[in-house]
Length: 165
Ligand SMILES: [Zn+2]
Image (cartoon, protein in one colour):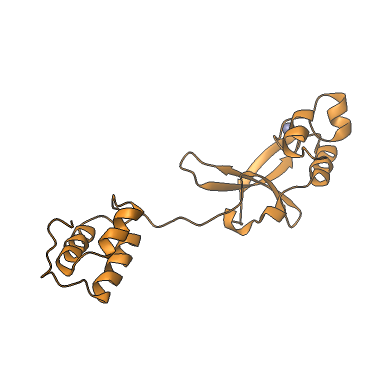
């Protein structure tokens, strides 16, 4: 880029630079932050070339929803929800209900973005669920071991999800 620039090249205008900045945000491009910094200092004609290239590039896909929670088991308004990451990386929410002695997963009225880390089930929530249904609230497997039935949670899940307690 600097090899083609000459002293006669007019500097890029603020408008060009603003357009360049916007396009860098919204278009797919191979520029590293260092290259972007260099291009921002480019002359008007070179900036024009960069802008043309960006205008010809496809738009970046819109970010889905920025969700900061982890997959896991959550509790909201007394109901238990399972949040899992799909193969495409999208968080899917299912409402958990125990019907008979079987765990059923229903469509959730809440989206993943409506949960916060504070909604994660506590050890008390999990053991309460375990005592009520005889099912582990972390992996939704039947509690069969006498100690697990007594604890309301399986030893592996307790260690994994509530290591501090
Ligand atoms: Zn479990």
